[in-house]
Length: 392
Image (cartoon, rainbow, N blue to C red; front, side):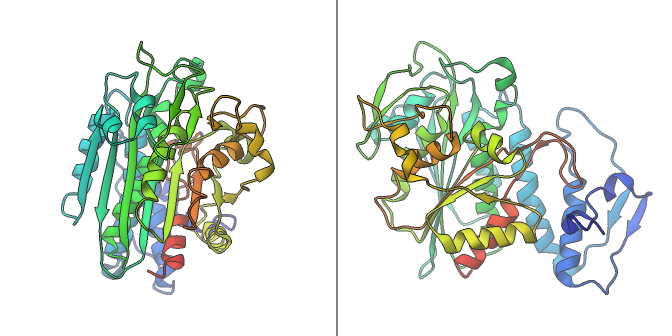
């Protein structure tokens, strides 16, 4: 038993056990068996599309009654990791959409896509602006699985397939892992697919703005002012604060259709990593009950998410003389909070419960059940928290 992280007791079992087939004691509860097998599977993950690693002959007996539950949970985590680990020359915006469609085959969903200049025609100016510098066209993917007389859940995920920083270019060490900047979209796709596989009584909508933030003569410039979908003007103070730009158009669009809960995931700020480290996502929400459930489920699933405040006193730091709002704070402090306040300006006109999660989506070290590389952070906690909160 790992007393500090009980769920990950078998997190290293795949690499450490002698070859063979194992079975967990029947004296354990069904939930304990599920958790141990999930941890074993998470530790057995390998991203071997480009370099083959030896497979160890270590396996566990999977009880039939847990077969679907374990496989769906592992599938969600593996999907998130695989998408984040894919290099940016492979997971381009158009290839990302191809992968999304492939993952949802067999599930009853409608998939819509708005691409390139059609974003301007249909009033998604900021999504278009962020992606205009790339040879790969920006797009908004909408996935709908409607269910009558059910609560409505809308998921929004930041999908920047690579982030150079734009004209405010990142240094090389800051750019090296920017294949992971679509981690929010990976989480929301995986979460949505998991929900559909588990057949929740929920009407589901997923919005994924997908772009590459590149440098060319078409790139947005510091000082540009762009009118957002809801009519609010945004001054581009820093072209490397691009994720919140594509999210605000998507969030505005999300709230044009009634929903009972709105959630976004994004690899949004380095400031959240400074505040909480790389392994704890930051949660911002206007729903205290949901925050409490998330904290409880995070502890239960060894999947900690920590709440930070929409601290209204910091709002002046994203005010600007020439537009309604700036996409970057005017002081070098509280960057995670000012980014969340920016998003809140596009959601607080509604009384819909809203949560924003700012996560790293990448393990910088190997831990039991969590190998170095792309990671689903907060996925288990969010899945269970939403199930409880929406009574699904």
